Amino acid sequence: MRPTAFHLERSWQGRTVDQETAGRPLSWQAAQAFAAEGAHVILDTDEPQRRAQRFDALAREQGLQDTVLQWATRDFGTITIREEAPRSGEPMGEGPTPSVPGSVALVGSGPGDPELLTLAAMRAIAEADVIFADRLGAAGDCLRLAPGSLIVDVGKKPGHHSMIQELINEQMTVFARAGARVVRLKGGDPFIFGRGSEEWQHLAENGIRVDVVPGITSALAVPARAGIPATHRGITRAVTIISGHEAIDGAEAAALVQLGGSVMILMGMGTLPLTQRALLEAGLDPATPASVIHRGFHGDEARCHRTLAAVAQDAADAGLTSPSIIVIGEVAGLHTTTADITDGL
View 1 (spheres, helix red, strand yellow):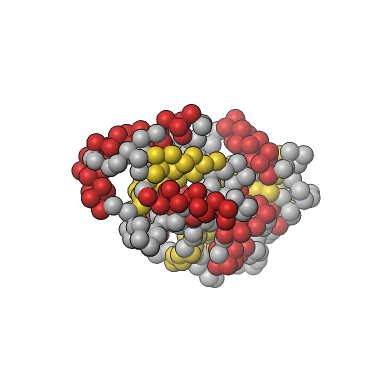
View 2 (spheres, one colour):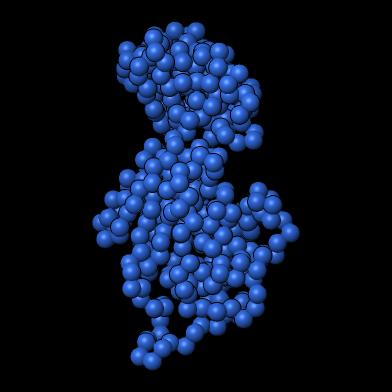
């Protein structure tokens, strides 16, 4: 961890600090001081009640129920912090100007199992000063993988974003300009429906160096674990990966039916009935195999293997919601012959 201009006048070992911030380098340096003392630091901008609720959920998930939650306000009035006096000739302000500019690494964390992080991803996380973490992938392991880093929760859930995209872009730029090594940790691969290219463009336009660490995309890995290959000799040689935020329309469905092959749908549980109807109306055989794999690579993973005609209702009856991967095509029928390979994993 890079040195910070702050020293704390008490021990914060094993405590969890929820620090309100305006996203300034001063806030980042104070958070580094907490982290250096062995504290778990959470940086947030939401109102206190919602922050406390998210912290409680994180504490349960990480087994931190017995830790002490401390609060830091924007002016640090609730905790005692002593700032080092500046060296002779050095002005007071937001901290020393770094001699080396910061950078941002767009890191794919894979489908959820931390063992599927690449070596490059592990290295970037371990060396990060600040991590902007999504809720998917291995983001939940940040406290273990990067105990000295500042973790900023920017996870998105259907209907709720803890931080809007424009603010994420702005905050990453602020920290990088302050000299921080920033990691933008995203589920799966940052360039597969992860808005990684948008973030890259914003950072590049602001003169920030960007490194890309690809990740294993859940679109291929989650079906593979369930015994469903994306391609299979003699069955299909084409794979189409689709965002299901909006249901496919008639023209798109007709093109998919004409192309054939495997269809992998991400973020598509809310629109699955509409997608199912569009494909059936476009002439896809109702008996075409279809599968839904919920929370792949997690302990509560659940699978539903059906036909196109039945998959939407059966998945709903089984209580399968987001995040799930939907597979439509003949390859979805191969799980029965490969289940003995995957069931023990």
